[in-house]
Image (cartoon, rainbow, N blue to C red; front, side, top):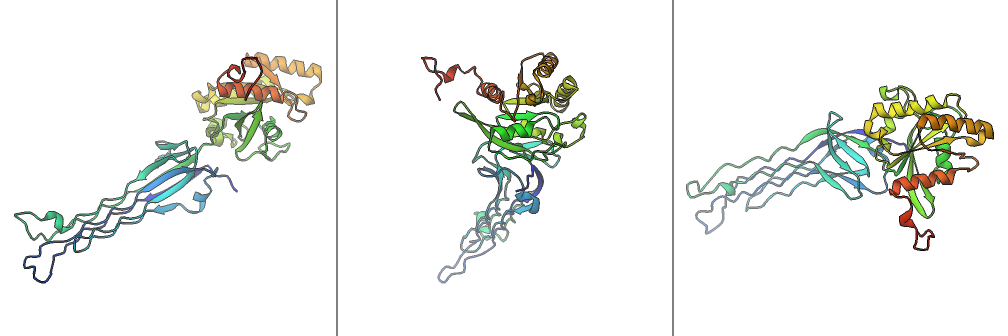
Amino acid sequence: MKFLDLAKVYIRSGSGGGGSVSFRREKFIEYGGPDGGDGGNGGNVWAEAVDGLNTLIDYRYQQHFFAENGQGGRGQGRTGRSGEDKVLKVPVGTEILDEDEETVLADLTEVGQKVLIAKGGNGGWGNLRFKSSTNQAPRSANSGQEGVERTIWLRLKLIADAGLLGLPNAGKSTFLAATSNARPKIADYPFTTLHPNLGVVGIDGREFVIADIPGLIEGAHEGRGIGDRFLGHVERCSVLLHLVDGTSETIAEDYRTILDELAAYSPELAEKPRVTALSKADALDSEALEGAMDVLTKASDGRVLPLSSVSGDGVREVLRELRREIMGDSGSEDEAEDGTWMP
C-alpha cells in the first residue's frame, strides 16, 4: 500500500429541509388550521480515528465528501427525515487542518476519537409553528439552513515511541530491520528510504514502536532532500535515536548537521531526549573504533553507544537505553524485591 501522509479534502454538510405550508382539510372539521411540519436537519461531517489504518491513501482518489440534505416537512405535522452523516475514517495520529494548512482544528490521537468538522443545517419551521391567537392561518414557513462547505487538510503524524534520525546511509533502516519484523528497503545509495517505516521492537519483555524516516541533509529545513517532509512523524516520539555513521570521515560535522536541522525545524523537537549511537562499528578495527568514539563523544558532550546492526553488537544496550527513556525510569519499577527483573 502506498504511503500518503497529507491529503486535501473538500467537505460539505447537509442543508436542512424546508418547512411545509399546509392546512388541514378534513370532513366535519370546519376550521382545520395549519398543519405544516418542520424540515429535517442536514447531516453532519465527522472525522473518526480508527484502528488498522496507517496511511491516508484512501483520500488520494476521493477528495469530495458530502453529507445528506434533510428532507422537507409535510402536511399533517410530519417532520422531514434528517440527512445521514458522513464520517471520514482516518488513522490514529491524524491532524485536521484548516485550509491555510496551519490552523489545527483537531488532533486525533486515540482509537475511537471523533470530532465534528462540519455541522449540518437546521431544518426550517413549518407554518404550524407560526400559529398564534392573532395569526391563526399563517401562510409562511422557513427554508432550511444551508450546510457548511469548507476545504480541510488531513496530515498524518505516525505515533511511535522512538524515532530514528541520521544522515542518509547512517544505518537507520538496517537497525530497524535487525530489531523488528519491519522490512524496509536497504541499499548503499542515499535516500533509499522514501517514506516512513514502523517496527515493533521487543527487549526484556517490553515492546515499543520505532519510526524510521528518510535521512536528513544539510538545508533540510529549507526543503532540501525529502527528510524534512517526514520530521512531523517523530514529533510525537518520546525519545530520538541519533545514528552517526562510524565510517564517515566527518563524524563531528555529521552529528552537528542533524542537530542544526532539528533546531531549525522545531526547537521543541531538538529538545527531546536523545540517545546517540555510533553505527557500523563492525566495519572498524579496535583502534579506529576508539578514535571514532572519542570524536563523537566530544561532539555530543554526552554518552555514546557503539552499535553494529549487522553483527548485533551493542543492539541490546541501545534498545535498553531507548526503553528507559520511553518508560521514564531507570528500571527500578521493573525489578522485584529480590532484585530480579519482572515483566
